[in-house]
Image (tube, rainbow, N blue to C red; front, side, top):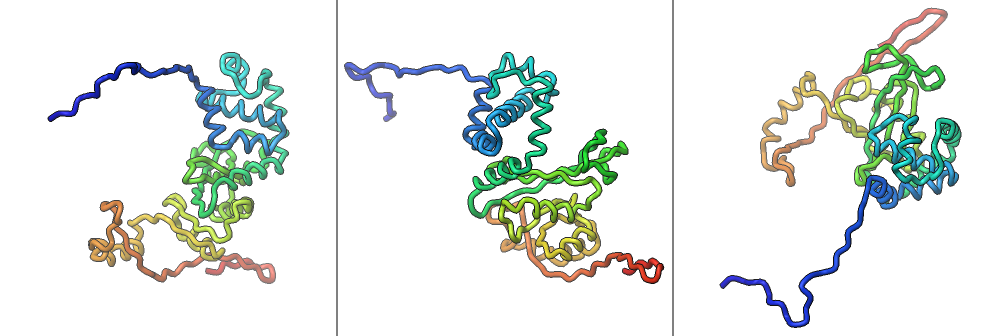
Length: 284
């Protein structure tokens, strides 16, 4: 026997009422801002005019794929934005100057985003260097430049909420600051997150014996990805090959991942500069 569709009863209508609504890019961005709470947090942290301008510029950058701001005024004609007036060069120039000096508003926004994380929040930390031609950026220094163009760099550090998949805070620091010190400074600045003893998780871009030693000296817990070709790491892996091959070491939700824990003492050394009676010496 095969089940057939039910027969229509007398008096029943054969269809349902449907409606169609045209939804564009700005409608989607407005919905994202409302559901995520970003719009409310921006409006609560800044004045009404500045908040509307910032939200409009953010939607323009997302909707246009990052076009330059001089094109915003013409783009605004066909795309309704929270700020109804024309956003000219003078308008967004004054906005950036005012918001850049409004540290209270910036920290208030970070605190509002952090309050939405809830308990036991998981945050991801990203660090990158940006080259700049500007001579007015106080953070621009001669440091590591991944582009190799010889320009001054600024270190941009961003904190992301893993569950929400969105940035919640950022910090700019001089480009010549070492990686570990930049992390320490960022955690100090972002006290609104109440991270008393965070576990720093890094990829192999942060791995070096110098960074590991700096983490240890500052009593900062860390978990880092190390290159298996390093001698002392390779020796540890070779000792654990038999253990890792067992079923007890296999990840229960992903059989392609195996792991084991072992304690190993490793000796680090660093050079310290000492000066005595006008004589400079380096101690290891």
